[in-house]
Length: 143
Length: 143
DNA sequence: GTTTCACGATACTTTTAATGTTACATGATT
DNA sequence: AATCATGTAACATTAAAAGTATCGTGAAAC
Image 1 (tube, rainbow over the protein chains, first blue to last red):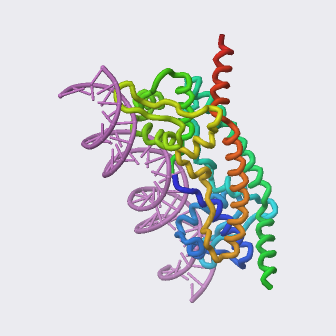
Image 2 (image 1 turned 180 degrees about the horizontal axis):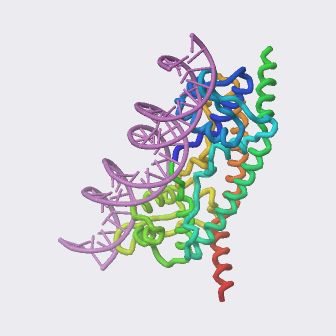
Image 3 (image 1 turned 60 degrees about the vertical axis):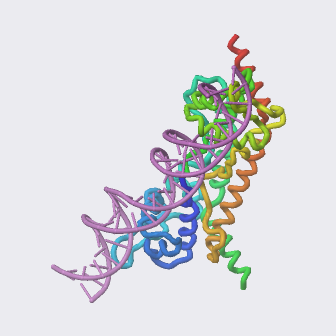
């Protein structure tokens, strides 16, 4: 598969939305991300289904944030966009009879599941609010 | 990209080789892995270039282990097969002017590089010798 | 009430890296 | 000389994300 940039892109969008008055259209967002509106709608659909954003049709419509920034973590966003895969590395056939392969699977499973747990913990520990604050701090530095 | 099963497969092969007298041919290995000999040669080529295995042509030829099992870690094997990607998740454009994107990249970089360091440490802490021992222990249980 | 704007959804094509496959060259053993 | 095994090049396939074209639907503006 290609690299998964959905989390990165959605964080980018969400942070912009927190500093933006009124709805942002899929076209605006697509230009911002260097992609196209259909991709934006497809990806944002996951956020909408999780209740993190809302979409409105028609004139003056577009996307708005619909959640408390403190309550949404990077992990929430990752899950909302349906990113199931974290690692490119995979192990062998899970239903093998080969004793050697079982040992290998066991070892790799251990390593990967520990790393996954850590990744999930880290992503779950950062809220959108925190990222927004970091952004503000960065801006104030330049004054 | 698809999932990367090269590390898993090579560990599987290497462990079999430690319990196998004489060279194993690419055909044998391919049948074992459920793939085909060219894939085996292609993947094993990395191990050969790193000096972990040796290959011999002609009658009675094939692949043999050429390294001290204690000295080769799972990380060594991972690197030998040229597995550069660990995560499916990627971050945005590294050369962006957007302050928001920079904050997002920074946050994701932090999380991913910590997880990567952990993965590398874990893989580097397990030697082929250890896996072979685990296999022996497993076998002795069944007696 | 019609036009315009924006999302919703479907149905493709493209991309990327691994994997699969075919074919042929090369060297070693019998 | 024949056979066996690797080495290599070239091309096809696969899986999942991303890109694209098109049409449908609802809401606001005129």
